[in-house]
Length: 374
Ligand code: ATP
Image (cartoon, rainbow, N blue to C red; front, side):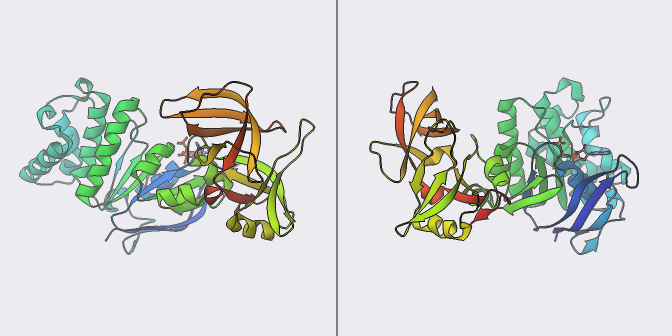
């Protein structure tokens, strides 16, 4: 069993010094046995620090790390049952692929024939069999990264740790390696923890995703749950591209119907949309508190007719993408937003359109706490 449990897991760099920095703020997380967990978040959110603490490359300054049933805080990295794959591959340039992969096993005094068996098996899985005698400089970026993964596989760890392993590869190779690592996870059935700042990698690879910001966990969920049911505005805007549109305003009740009313501006009249039952319930709770209406670009459609569930907007830029078009729009108050609509319309700059929000997929957030209101 290789569950990884973080309990009040905390990191302060340079504690008690002037330049001390609280990078990870007492996070709690259980990564399940055989799970592929992705840590994602913007630069500096603490995801690499968390991974490096699990690996034993950084001291844990507070809380506990458990792998299986054992507390690992003070256990040496090599005895934690983990193997890490780094962004920069960290291969020895003077060694062959075989020796790079065998290095850790040799240090552990693994018998020679066992080393050969394990390296051959990993090379076979990774398509490196014909390259075992080459040096790293004779390999492409993708092949080098495969060697780094192979070096982790031969150690048969309970937990694989990946720190942005695909960042140095070109876009095409990244997509290919992404599928290879997912396939590897299915084949090896090991617990894997993967750090990336790329939300597409996170969405496509993770069984679950842990979204971090400023050393805190913002939400941990399965990819589609994160996408469809974000708990706060940060997750709503970080997951999904282009990001979710946010409109500031407040909710009102008129003749037993609930409406969201955009904040006003000098430029033009704010929009007002009638809310469906689910959002009306949230609106009732908000009771005139500043509220944000969130809707993804793909959940805004062109409407032929105006009504109390549509808004009017002006097209600023139209980008035909082939399968769909991106419209950059402005509400009459001057608020910019994006819609992703079917490509079978022809759009003109400056054209005024009626739009309908798919409210089944929209959310209301409290403007102050940024938490979703349900
Ligand atoms: P990136 O994607 O840019 O690597 P990250 O989310 O992985 O970002 P971390 O590397 O975990 O971020 O860093 C978290 C914070 O801790 C950052 O603000 C960083 O400046 C700070 N930090 C990292 N290493 C040290 C260190 N050795 N001493 C002081 N502060 C550090």
